[in-house]
Image (tube, rainbow, N blue to C red; front, side):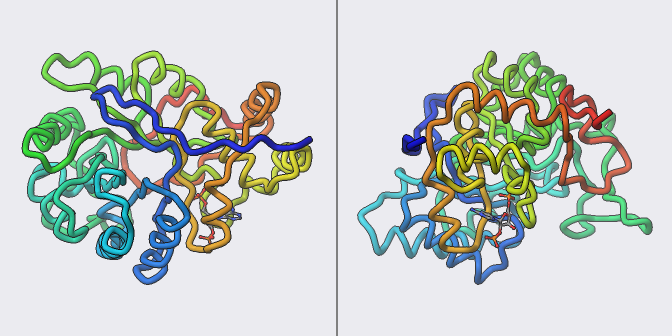
Length: 316
Ligand code: A2P
């Protein structure tokens, strides 16, 4: 069956800005690889790059973005750059974003995301851990993700970021942000989402509440295990495209932004060339989780930061 190609689309955020629905993810990209990957991506047509303080590659992202802007006719406002505040920085977001902007060599980012829904102790390094390897968090009763978000929103008026949002969150916690009177709604939430963890409830809830959802690890993270799933392979054969193209096209068909990570030039190019999937294939892939459910990324926290995902049910 001939595949119908689909261009990258701009999705409207609830604050009037727009976000390209495909981004280059940069987690685990070493500084040198990251520079080359971002440069390849921008030259290929990506306009959205996703990094984070914790990835330790903001300097490379910034160098590639600024070199690309100097070498091309593309303007800064045509790009969408996201970085994330680490939990150990939650109590002082202004200094955190100024440090990120310094590393990125940018005047502002388009999106500044809280990397988790729990704060970590400050002053003990980038991921402070106890003797058993658990991340050292601050009790939410003392300083909660809502307290952090309240501080974060001040960065918009200061011009350091255009939008804010939050990662690794679930429906009740998003609801709490939306219902708290003195908070602006998050423009974006970013979570692990792929056919083995489709998070249907979260995606529907956010759609109904005008919050854009970003899907990280859309291929199952390191080694891209999703690409061996028999249903993904079968759908790829039907359209004559790669399994990666199917997994990413499915994410986009559901209305999410998708953040494939790659440092391989050919894959970076492949990952932005998406297709229209039939509704029946979107639903076929959306039901894979009934056979196989898996979360690939879990950090060692003493409290459950991922609780109550309605879709995260181990296979019976
Ligand atoms: P690499 O960076 O060496 O190209 P995710 O986006 O789910 O986090 O997955 C990232 C992993 O998937 C990385 O190991 C990356 O490898 C690999 N990957 C990314 N794009 C593709 C692709 N089109 N085909 C196969 N593997 C891919």
